[in-house]
Length: 190
Image (cartoon, rainbow, N blue to C red; front, top):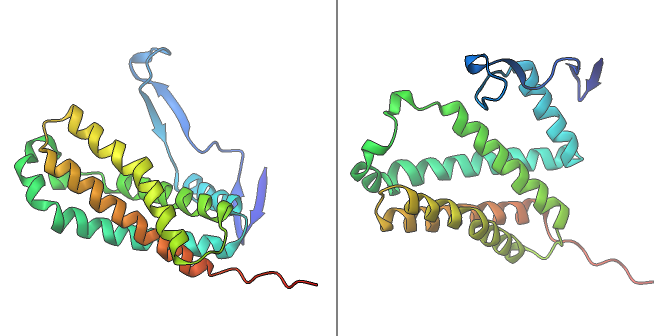
């Protein structure tokens, strides 16, 4: 079945993720070889735009993606770099890092960050964005960084800084969303 959506032609007969074969030919093994095609990534992106429900929100998602990715690069390559050096043996060498995984993860984060904001948006101004970013930071950054501290031999200061900087990133992204969505004008009374 071929759909024409947002000026793109998408073949929905091809699954987004194709399971080619189980590893070791065991159907009980959870490790599968996956084939993720560019066409299927495009389909996910288009369907994601439809999920947000309008094109303007998609542009907002793109803006938040750029802001978050830029901030996260500064945080990880400048602010947290000294802490990472002390535990570099725990990480892949830079030339072996699959950057596409990071960018897809950021895309997922910013997509749902924007989607949830758009569903609960009250139009109360910048403080609504600050609150939203703080709540998401507490929900996502606190557990991620402190669980990392609990299971990996990283210094507490690195976990704390990761939580703090990550929450600040999300607060800034929340402010960006509050600014682009704007304040709602009160409904005229009759």
